[in-house]
Image (tube, rainbow, N blue to C red; front, top):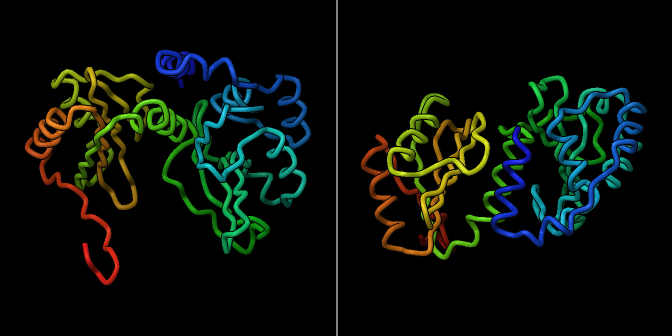
Amino acid sequence: MDWPLVFEFIRQRDPVFLSRLEGVPDAAIATLTAGRDVTLPGFYVEFLRRMGGSSNDYCPFGATQDHRFSAIAERLGEDDDALSSRFFPVALETDESQVALYDHYLDLRRAEDDDVPLVVLEQGVSLDLQLPVESHETFGERITTSVFSHFELRLRAHHEVVTQGCEGSGVLPRAVALLQRAGFVPVLPLLGRVACLQAGPLSVHAWFDENPARLRLRLGGDDPRALKQLADRLFADLHGARRPRPPKGPRGVR
C-alpha cells in the first residue's frame, strides 16, 4: 500500500486537513503489540503513525466508529484471550442506542503482505458464541474507498451508480482498462477489489463486491450531462450493466 500516494491525493484537495492529524509514537505501538504478542500489518501500523491519535473528524469506518489508538488499547484489555489471539480491533461502535454493537477487527491469521481482511464481531460476546462476519474487504481497501469518498466523490454535485453481475474478480481490471481507454487514470493505489480513477472533473470508484458477485461503479461529477454520457457509455460497454433498483418506499411505492 502506497501511503505517500494516499497523502498526496489528500494534500491536493485539503492541505489543511493534514496539518491537523495526530499520530501515535512508534514506542507506544511497539509496547502494545509486544504486550499482546501480535504482529500488525504494515499498512495499519502506518495508519496509526499518521492519524491514530486524531484523524481530524475523518471516520473511515463511519461516524459512530471510534478508531483512535487510545480506544483500541482500552478494548484489548477487555477482549478474551481466544479473540485477541486471532483478531485485532481497529474500529469500535459507540452508538449505544443500537440493539447490538458491532466492531471491526483485523483477521491476523489471514494477513497478506502489509494488509489484512476485516471482519465484524459483536461487542461483549465471546468468540465461542459467535462467528466473525466477513466484510469482504481488507483494511487497505476500506481506507482507499473512504479516502476517495471523503475527499473527492462526496463533494461532486451529481452522482450515478452502475452495477454489473459477474462471476469473478477479473471484471474489475477489465472495467479499469475500459475507463483508462476513455481517459481515466488511477489516483489512488489499485488494490484487489478497489480502484479509484479520475478524468478531469469526473470521478469513478470501482469496487468488486464478492457477496453477491458484482461490479459496482460509483460515478461523480459537477456536469450532469458529462456524467450521463459516462454512465451511458458504461451501460453500452459493460455487458449486463444496469442502474440498481431504488429501494422501496412506504407501502411499496418506488
